[in-house]
Image (cartoon, rainbow, N blue to C red; front, side, top):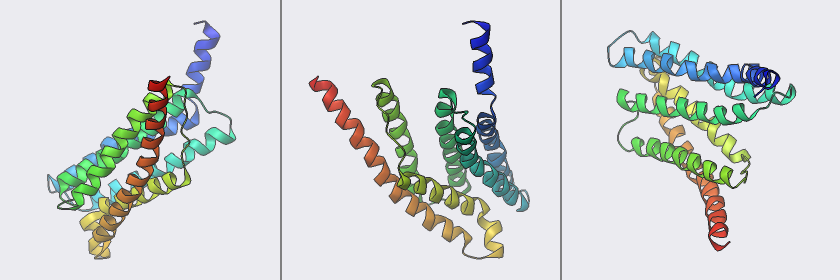
Length: 205
């Protein structure tokens, strides 16, 4: 690899869209730490509002990194790889912490399990399809799924702190979590169907 190629790769890795993605990953331990400190170590409720604020900021970067990559023509293979990973790390970490916190409990744990299993399934299918040079575009419904999922987690992160302001904050979060799980199953089926279709073609070939 020559110097020009190395500089080009470094420049793309440090572009604003990728920096926003790095920020989303960096936000994960802060959000989880705030919820852990409040719930497990019995620190003040205001830490949950800190977690919500940081989570919202991280969720906004999910939109901004793609937006700036398109308008500034800074799309890169590295960014396409890292962006969905950052999303999955953020969602999975928050769901696990909320389950440990007890906000997600009982039957609602199944909604969280469905979401996590779908993310693992889709990651595996994307890796397989990428090896076949097959691209499965993100549908509008999948984008809505992500939006509902993030809003649900935001409400659940507020949890008891939000319930002190509006008593149904946690309930709204759980309802949205189930709505997200339903959308997750539907969109996950689309990826699964595409994967099976190409798998059958590969075996027949």
